Every structure is written in C-alpha cells, then in structure tokens.
Image 1 (cartoon, helix red, strand yellow):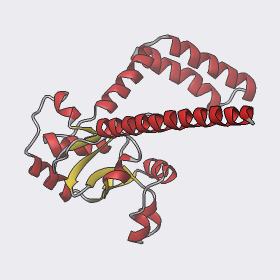
Image 2 (tube, rainbow, N blue to C red):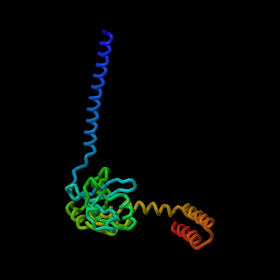
Image 3 (tube, rainbow, N blue to C red):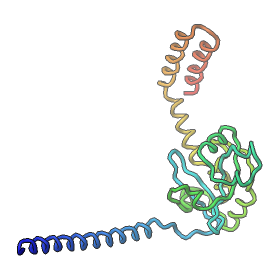
Length: 230
C-alpha cells in the first residue's frame, strides 16, 4: 500500500511538472507570436503610396488608394470573354494572368490590400530611393492611378505594372525589371558561345528533318545575326 501511494505521488509530481512546462512553453509561444505579429505588421499606409510585392520571378506593383484598396495593372483574359463584373472582379488566378499576358489584355483594377498582396509581404515606397525623379505629392499620385482604372493595352516589356506605378508616382513610365531583362538578353547575344550553340542546334535539325528552307535558313540566318550583334 505504501509503495502504491509513493508511486502515485511520483506520477502526480511528474504530471504537475509537465503541465508547468507546457504552460510556460505556451506562454513563450504566445510571446513569439506577438513579437512576430508586431514585426510583420504592415507599416501605416498613406493614400498614394507605391506598394511592391515580391513574387517568385518578378515583383508586382500597385498604388494605395486608401481604405485598404490598391490600384494595380494586371493581365487578365476574362474581360475578353465576359462582361460579368462580378466574375471579372474576382481574384485573378495564375491561368487568367498568363493568358491575359499572352493575349496582351490587362486592366487597371482596384483590389483589397489582401488580394493584392496574395500572401506576400508588402514593401512601401522602396522605389523612391532608386528613381532619379522625385515622387509627386501623394494625392496627385492616387488621382493619376484612379484616372487610369479600366481596360488598358498590355506589354510585358513596355507597359507592365511597374510602368503604371512609375508613371503615377514619378511622372514618367519606367521599368527596372525590363531594363535588367534587356541587359541580360544583350549579354547572351554578346556571348559568342550562343552562336556556336545555335549553329549546332541548326545542324541537328537539318540532320533530323532534312534539308529544307524551314531548317536551313534559320541555321544560317540566326547565327549570322547573333554574330553581327555581338
């Protein structure tokens, strides 16, 4: 009997220690959550701020209009097939975006801050440090964005979301992402190894499909153009 009581006391002691540890661990976890929430909380936004959202391959941009609303230029294929505003105003999926980009159909639309961010962190006015031109007054920026709301011709290189926000905030359209892409393309063209690679691919196509204008002309013209460009 004494042994049984001793066993129960030991178990109760271990259980109470475990509960105390669990309680302190939960409190520490809650404190970590609060610190994370404080650290990850978005800064106070002003109407006319330029918002930037990092994506996998590119950054997406928009202009904050106040009241948790963002104007942004985004490709969308849906307006080509329907005029149902309820359907069009739904969150744009990747398929809609890619097809809109291919069809060069886009809109400057207003979405909630959450839909615009799409789960990513938001950078505010980061481009102000990179642009040579000074930012316009915030209210003027927001009004410029609101005037452009609606359908717009889209170009991945020459009229994208970055062109839209830089026009609104700095008075002239520009895209650092486009500039970087063009520089990368130029470096590839300057690299004479691309001429050799293209020539080899052309020879393989001739061997595989035979001598024909569709295989012979690209084999000659593309390497020649790359060589002259380099």
